[in-house]
Length: 48
Image (tube, rainbow, N blue to C red; front, side, top):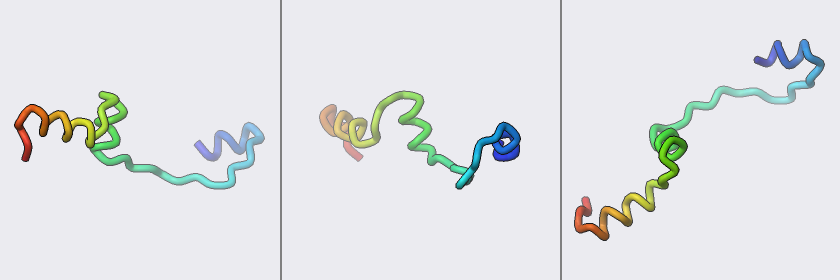
């Protein structure tokens, strides 16, 4: 990716790989935050 951008004349100042957590991926897919899920679970009496 960096090579491609540089060939296109873009100055790349920083590049790094990002490894999202399973929770990050879940939130991206569902739009549900972990804290929201936890509160809903507690409301329904299914607390851990």
